[in-house]
Image (tube, each protein chain N blue to C red):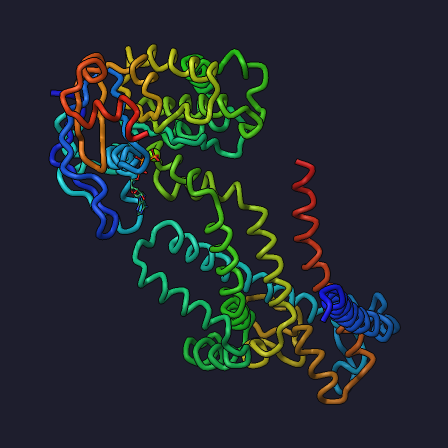
Length: 277
Length: 248
Ligand SMILES: Nc1ncnc2c1ncn2[C@@H]1O[C@H](COP(=O)(O)OP(=O)(O)OP(=O)(O)O)[C@@H](O)[C@H]1O
Ligand SMILES: [Mg+2]
C-alpha cells in the first residue's frame, strides 16, 4: 500500500475515534442537562426529600451535603496516607525489594472492584469497629478507593523532580523532613492539589463503596461523623431502582454532573493561574 | 595532621569498586585540587567526604574519613554536611527567589530575625562576588540568573551554613573565561577562611589556584603533592603522561 494512503487511513481512524468519543460524552452530558434541567429549581436544591415513597417530591439538599462531606473525609484520609507513602518510597526507602512489593500492593489496591471495597468497609468498619452505617465508615472506604489514585500520581511527581535540587538541600546539612516540607511541598503544591481535586471527583461519583457503609434512603444533614447520610449517587440509584421518580433522578444526575465537572475544571484553573505567576 | 584525613578509603557501587584504597590528608585553609580523567572517581570522592554517596542505592564505603580527628561515621550525616559543604557540577538553585535561596538553610536553624538574615545574605553574596549584580532585586527568581551567576549563588548558599570545608565539583565547567576568573579569584580569597577541595578538568586552573594537587586514575590516588612539584616534577610516569595530555 502506498504510504500516503496508510498515513491518510491512520489520520482518518484517529479523527473518527476522537469524534466518536467526544460526541458520546457530550451527548450524555447534554442529555442529562436537558432531562434534568426541568426538575431543577431552588426547592430541589435546598429542600429535603418528601412524599411517599420518600424522594418522589421535595429536594435533595441532604444528599448534596452528604456527598460533599463524604468526599472531604475521603480526600483528607487518602491524601495524608498517600503523601506519606509516596514520600517514604521516594525519599527514604533504599530497599529495592520493599519498593517493588509496595508498588505491587498499591497497583493491586487500585484494581480492587469498588463493591468489594464496600464489602470490606461494611464488615470491618461498620460491624467490626462498630462505626455503624456512617459518614466516617463511608468516607474511609472511599478514601481507600482513591488512595492509590493519589499515591501513584504524587509518587510520579516526586520521581520526575530534579534530584540534584534535593541533594543540594541535603548537602546543606538539612534533613529529609525539612527538605520535603520546605522545598518539595512548596514547589509541587499545585500539582498535588490538582491531583486531590481529581480524586475528589472520582470519590463523589462512586456509589458502590457507600451503598453498604454510609448511604441511606433518607437522613437529615448529618450532625456527627457517626451519623448515616444521604448521598447523590445512592439517591439516584434508589430513585430509579425503586421506580420512585425518574424526573427527580435526572435532576439528581444533573447536580452530580455539575459537581463533577466543577471538580475537574478546578485543577485546570489551578494550573492556568500558575502561568500568571 | 590535616583537617580531613582519608584512610584506606574504598567505595563501590554494587560489585564495581570505584575508589581503591585512597589515603590523603587535606590541609586546613588551603585549596586542594583533584584532577584525573573522566569517570576516574573524582565526584565519588567528594560525595564520600560529605556522606552524599549514602543517598545512592547500592553504594558501599570501606575505610575511614576523619574530620578534625573525629570519624565521620560517628557523626550524623546532617552535622557533617553542615561542616563540609558541597557545590555540584551544575548549578542547583531552588526555584525560589534569590533571597529565599539564601535564607532557606538558616530558617531550619530557627534564625528568623529579618535584620540578621538580611545582613547575612548581603555578606555571603558579597563573598561570592554576586552582590553587586543582584543587590537591586533580591526577589528575582534564581532561575532567571545566568549560569555563572547561578553557580556563584550556589556557592554563596553553601556558605550560609558556615561550613569549614567547601567541596566544589567542577564549578567552572560550564562557564566562560570571565566567569571562571571571577570564581577563581573568589576561591583564592575564600581559602583564607575556608578549606577548599576543588575537582577540575582544567589543569591550568589547578596550577593557578591550588596549593596542593591530587591526581586520580581509575580510582587510585596516583600522586598527591604540592601543586608546584606535581606539575613541574611529577614522580609517577602516569602523572607526567596525564599532564602532557596523553589520557586527555
Ligand atoms: N550512582 C552510581 N551507581 C553506579 N555507578 C556509578 C554511580 N555514580 C557513578 N558511578 C560510576 O562511578 C565511576 C566514577 O564516577 P564519578 O562521577 O566519580 O567520575 P568523575 O571522575 O567525577 O568523572 P567526571 O570527570 O566525568 O565527572 C563511573 O564509572 C560511574 O559510571
Ligand atoms: Mg564528576
